[in-house]
Amino acid sequence: MSIHKKRVLSGIQPSGKLHLGNYFGMMSRMIEYQESNDLFCFIVNYHALTTIHDKNELKDNTLNAALDFLALGMDPEKSTFWVQSDVPQVTELTWLLSNMAGVGLMERSTSYKDKIEKGLKPHMGLFSYPVLMAADILLYGSDIVPVGKDQKQHLEITRDIAIKFNNTYGNILIIPEASINQDTKLIPGIDGQKMSKSYGNTIPIFAEEKIIKKAVMSILTDSAGINEPKDKDTPLFQIYSMFLDTEGKKLLNDRYDTPGLRYGDLKKELFEKTIEYFSPFREKRTQLSKDMDFVYKTLEIGKNKASKVADDYITKIRNVMGLNY
Ligand code: TRP
Image 1 (cartoon, rainbow, N blue to C red):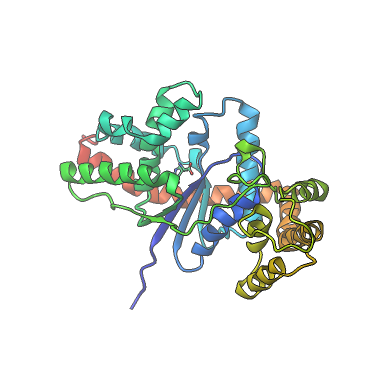
Image 2 (tube, rainbow, N blue to C red; image 1 turned 30 degrees about the vertical axis):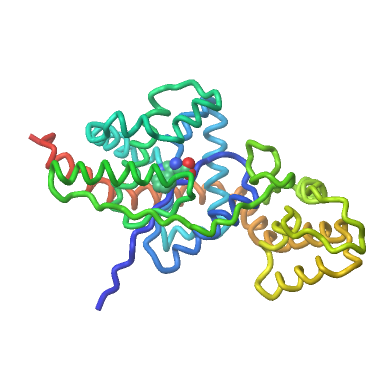
C-alpha cells in the first residue's frame, strides 16, 4: 500500500536577521516537517512588497532568507523550496479568487486593521494580503498549513474563499486545515517582551559572536541576591530552557532554587550554548554564501517543482471558470 504524504505548506517572510525567536518558534518545527510530509516552503517576497519598497532591501532579504533556511537544514531534495515570485501564476489566482472574497470578510481582518493602526498607509496590497495568501495555499493543493496564532484568521479566510469557489465551480480546490501550535511558547526577548525584530530585543543567530554575546549578556535580570532563590518566570530562564531537554530543564530549575547562582555565570553559559548549538548551521551558512551559484540553482529547481503543481491547478481553475474558451 502506498502511503500518501500530506502536503504541508508554509510561507516565510523575508524579514531580515534571523533570531532565536524565529528559530524556536517556527523554523525548527518547519524543517522537521520535511521528514514525513511533502513540504512546500517558500519565501513570500510578493507579500513583503506590502511593506518593503526598496529594491535592494527586498533582494537582500530574499537571498538571506534562502541562505538561512538552507543552512538550517531545509533539504531541497526532500522538499519543494522556492521564492514566491518565481511562480507568478499565484498572482493570477489572486485575481481569480478576489471574486470569491467578500469585502466584509476582508474588512474584518485583524491583521489589516493592526497594520493600519501601526501607521502603515492603507493600500490595496495590504488589503488584499489575505487573498494572495489564500492563492498561495490553494494553488498547491495544500492539506495542512502550520501557522502561528496571528495567522489563524488568514486561514479562516482561505477556507471561506475555497468553499465558496467549490460551491460555485465544483470541487476543485482542497480545503486546507490550519495547524496552529497551541503550545507555541512565547519566546521572550532580552527585555522580557516577545522576541521580535520590531522591539529590537532579539538574539540573532547568524550575527558575529560578539554581537550575540552582547545581546545575551544584556538579558534583563532582577536584583535577587546570589543566595536568594530566583524567579523562573524571567527571560534568562526561559531562553536558556529552550536549549535544554527535560532532564536539563530539571537541573536548571534546581539551580534556580539553590543558593549561589550568579546570573552573570548563567549568561556566559547561555552564550556558549548558543554558539555551540548553532555553530554547524553558522558554518554551513558561511559555506553557502560563498557558493551563490549553488543557491540560485537550488531555488531554480524549487521553482520548477512548484511551477508544475501550480500549472496543473491553474489550468483546472481556468477551465472551470470559463477562461479557456
Ligand atoms: N502571512 C504569513 C506570515 O506573515 C506568511 C505567508 C504568506 C504564509 N503566504 C503564506 C504562511 C501561506 C502560510 C501559508 O507569517
